[in-house]
Length: 454
Image: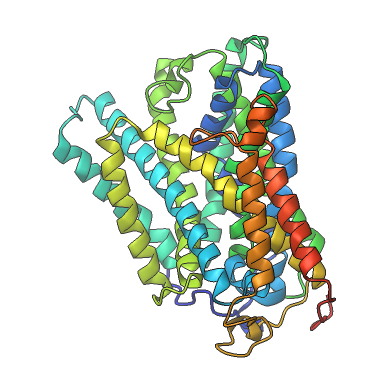
């Protein structure tokens, strides 16, 4: 229970511990949550039939969760967080903006989780006969939830890894019960079906709320593994740990959406598919799973804030993040536009995440997995310094990818011209990833030096 002091600083060989299979429990405990269930209901709400929704869920997750495995490979080799490794492609100063986007990414998901924790807690109070409409009670619930949420991310890596292992077994049992209760009610052919353009929107949604959004966290949790750890095991456990829960729970969410019209509301809508005796256990399950997801988000958001150039130790960064989340939660709880804000947020993630992943992985392939770990933290004149601390090839490739993604996006915020020209299709992730990666590869024609045997 000692508070971890290390932020993005390098983990020395003497401090390494754990096995690659620990990543399986970390990612399973993190992704097996109510949020994942709700994403499945949203896929059906786009107009897809249940079989189409299942296909979109499988395709989207198979395409996105390998990214988590790939971004976990650098952790054992280098001993620092994913966004700190991004300095190799963007430069120490250039990577700050991307790390800041990564921080916003995590804070957005944290705030969404805190809002749902609050709603679920208020619903539990209603079940207990306690009136939960007063502003004072709502604020009190938010504060208590924040204090509970603070513990594991503040203590640090070892506590998070251990807790997620135990969470996994509890969540598997509870969601299995839920599947048994909902299964007989599923209307497999519900919905008239959707065209291919709408199907691509669903795949983009699955990818953006799944493996693509988790990719910037990969090395945050693998960095404590020994450098000799099997690369195949690190990749496989990290990818499968998120892939399997997402496919199963999103499918369960899609099934629920065929039974309950407003299943996208996990507190007052989705429980309508459950027998009355299971509503209280379900709400407790919702709260605990949301705490588990937020634990991983909060831990990594603190690292991203450090990587963005903010000079705070890791503990202070975690506390600051939680304070901001509490403020956002207060606004959302007293507002009627939470679902709109969440959908807009998820749609806009693609614009920076897909190009970042394209540049990051192209740079990793180009370097054949080898980095100068100390050079990532060099203040001046390091191997990744670029011009004035910025590697412009990475920045230009990122910008090109973002333009490509914007041209082909179909989100709640706006629809790109290429999407409009193709009937509302959404190929933004593929366009952003491919264009950014290809532009970066073209600009970085010289082979990178292999500093350490891959």
